[in-house]
Every structure is written in structure tokens, then in C-alpha cells.
Length: 317
Ligand code: ZN
Image (cartoon, rainbow, N blue to C red; front, side, top):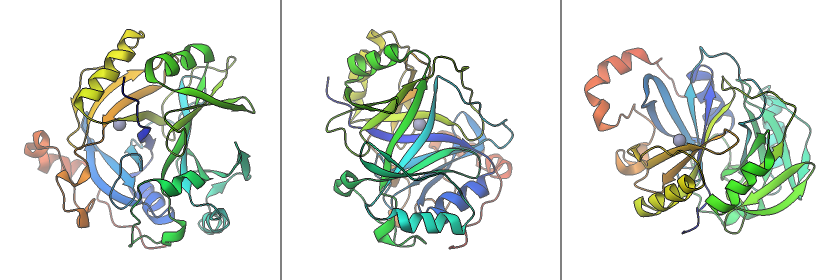
């Protein structure tokens, strides 16, 4: 099997869309590269934040389901997403987050890297990681960001998952998906793909006594992994099916093609192709400025536009 390339995107559940936009595009300075709707629930936005070009592996996306109850911590969930920032930038970030009243935790060192954990306005755990290896990743700065280029978020760094039975998940990661164990620290096991550097690993821990976690506002909905193209996606799909997962068929998300399955502990995974990408239906200079719908939803545009709340650009903070 060709190796999975790393994280493609992470999707989480937020509260009200405007507050989500104000935080990720305003406070964190990411670019809103796509403003669309949840294709299975078109009355809800699907908002994508990324680097200026929306490179695969740089995007954090949200379903603003403000009516949901808060998420419940527990096993079978991904419980934190981390974002790569340049080495030496956490001082800048700590000051910026404090200025906007963000709930920031104590600075930590994880596997030798400086980390600043925080919580977004709707309870999602987000960590900024000073990631030296992120400097070698494809990255296009967002010139209109309120955050200076030197400190901008460079993409997804990783995610954390909590499991009732660690072994079944780690065996699946290794045998069906090609991960390898990189290291263990403070109860967290790091599993990597390829070089195991920025955007190519996940941290897993066992939480045997905990309840099953549940989705809600502030939770991660799924973690998507990069495959090159249709053939590669089919190959990985076959591999996870042989290992006992129950993958969906291929679903055309228009900007990429997706397959979904749960790993044995219950975390929802997706495979997503690198192409065709976010510029397939918008001028790269104007990504995210208007509501974009996949062709099969265009007929419903008027009803969809009436159903979703109006969004205004975040004030440049
Ligand atoms: Zn997805």
C-alpha cells in the first residue's frame, strides 16, 4: 500500500458561525478558504480555515451546530487538535490570546516541543505547537491576515485521541493504515506516518475508566487523512475494510473525494484525496468570500441562503 501522507483536515463542531469566524479568522488569523454548507445538512454552514492556498493538511473545518449540547469528554473521541506555529512564536501568541480573553492553559513541553494549550470560544481544545518541522511544509502565507506572516499558523500539527482499549486502536493504525510507534510520554503514545513530523502523527492514550465520549459543540467530529488520488484511496479503503472497519463508499465532496470509517475505538476517520482542491470553483484570490455550493445543491441556493445566518468579515483585530 502506498503510504498515507498525513493529516488532510480536521473537522469540529462549533457554536454560532459568526463567533467561530471571529475566532479562527480574526484572533488566529487563518484564512477562510471556503464558505459552504454541510452536504448532509445544507441548512448548516461548513467553514474551512487554512493557509492562503488551502494546502491539504492545513485546514481546520467546522460545522456550526449551535443548537447541540456541549460535547462530553470520554473515550472514542478525538479530544484536541493542534496547530503548527513557527519556533519562537509562542510569546507572541500568548500575548495575543490573552488580549482577546482566550482561555489559555499552562505552557507545556511535549516530545521536546513547546506547546500552548487553549480553548476556543465553544469549548474545543486547541494547542499551538512550536514546530520546527512545520517550516519545511508547503505553506502560503495569508497577506491579509491580522497575524504577521512570521507568526502565522502553518497548518495542522496533530490531534489527540482517547481510547478505552488502546491496543485495538494502535494495532489498527499500524497494520491497516501504516502508522508506526514513534514514542511514549506521560501516557500519550505517538504514532506517525512517513517521517512522523509536523502534520504526520497522532497522539493516543488509554482512558479505560472513562465513559464513552459524545459529540457536541466543542468536539472534534472527524480526522481526515491524505491520500494521493482515487486509486490510492481505493487501496487504503480496501486495507481498512480487510482489518474489520466498515468504510463508506467514495463520496464526492467536490474539493476532494472522501471515504469514512470508524477506527476500532470509535473515532471517526476519513480518507480524502489531495485534489482537486479549493480553487476548483473559486478564483484563488477570492476564496471564501461567497457561499459556494457543490453543483447538486445549486438548485436549492435560495432556500439555503435564507437558512444560514449572515456572516460578516471579522474586524481585523
Ligand atoms: Zn471531512
